[in-house]
Structures are given as structure tokens and as C-alpha cells.
Amino acid sequence: MLTSSEIEQYRRDGYVTPDFRLDDEILEEIRETHARLVQKHPEFCDYCSALLAYDPWFLNVARRPEILDMVEQVLGGDFALWNSSFFAKPARVGSRTPWHQDGEYWPIEPLATCTVWIALDASTTENGCLRVIPGSHRSQQLARHHRSDAQNIALNLELDASEFDESKAVDIILQPGEISLHDVFLYHGSEPNLSPNPRRGMTLRYMPTTSVYRHAAKTSFEREGRLEMCNRTVYLMRGTDRSGSNDFRVRY
Image 1 (cartoon, rainbow, N blue to C red):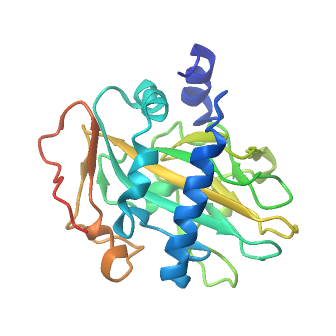
Image 2: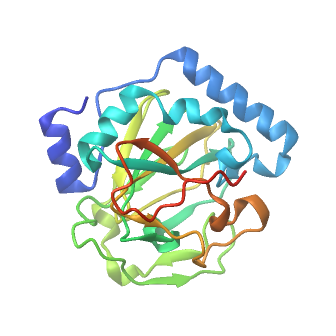
């Protein structure tokens, strides 16, 4: 469970790195399952935006009670999982994730999500750990983004530089098995991995069921087939659908 000070930090700063660590056994299972996925789908060696569309085994991680307990503390007792992704930065790969807000890409109304980021390797300044601007979520609004055609970036929408002061950025440094939680409106990004060490991370995306996942909505981050936003299965994790409008049918 999150402590009262950890909950306070999440509210104040938009993120928290709790005093918690997944055990080595489940970490190894995640790595092995991801390796099998990449063997079948080599195109996902760096990034898979929709793990559950290809292997529902990852639900075993999303349903772990200790993770759900922490999410419930920040979202309340009624929430759903709408996605899980995998981010891999192989050693000495020079791609960066530009500064952005997650909600710029997602068809959720009203916009609300707590992301759980799980480190499968040590995530450090040298290998491109997550960087955040503390408190940037407080307005609960999307800031100005622009489309970027720069080379070697992981996303094509980037926060306008006038929207934030990068000198206030904080690195989220994690050891294998440690996690962070962050708000959908938090400004964040990451630098390239120029180190000899890989940096792999898995995300779990939970939303309160007072929000609705709009399967029919078009977003600025569409992919084909299973990866399209309209094809994500939403899984009720705890409580009830408070909105009464979420569609929990299995897509894949």
C-alpha cells in the first residue's frame, strides 16, 4: 500500500516511486513472455503499444493485488485496465521519447489514467530513464503539442518548448522490479540509451470507470489492425462501471 506521504506526493507532483518491488520470479516471467512475443513478432523488439492484443498472459501482472491496491488508492475503488505496453531501449540505441502528455494520444472521456511503469532492467540517467516535470499535471489540461518529423524519436507529437522549463526535470531512477505511478497529464519524456546496458519497461494503464473509453473515436496515434485504439479490450479490475457506458467486450 502507498503511505500517506506517497499519496500526497502523487497528488502534488503527479508521480510517485513507492517503496515496493516485484519479486525476481515474476520479473523473469515477464522477460520470458516478452521474449516469446518478440520471437513471433520481431517488429516489437523496441516497442509494443498493445501487449494484451497479442498475449493475455500479461493480465497476470495487471491483476496482481499489490499493484491494484496502490492504483485504488489514487483512482478510487472503481477502475479498469485499458492497455499495457512494452518499451525497450537496447544498449546504445539513440532514440528518444520527446516531452509529451500521454493524454494527447488517448480516446478517454473525461481524460483520466494512472500509469504504472515497471522496470525490468535498472532504469538510469545513462540508459534513458523516464524524466518528468513535477507538478505539470495540476491544471488537468492538455498543453500545446506539435507534430515532429525529427529523426530517432519514439513519438510524433511533442510538447511545445514554451509550455515548460526543462531545467525542472527530475529523473525517475529505478532498480529492476521497482515501479513508478504517474498521472495522465504529467509532462514526461526520456533521452536516448547511449549506455552498454538495456532499458526495458512495461506499463499498465488504469482509468477510473467514471471515464469512458471511446472505441469509436479516432486519435492522432492510429495503427493498423490489433494496434488500433478502437481494438483495445477494456478489463474491469475492481468495482463497477460507474459511467454505465464502457464496453468490456473482448476484441482480441
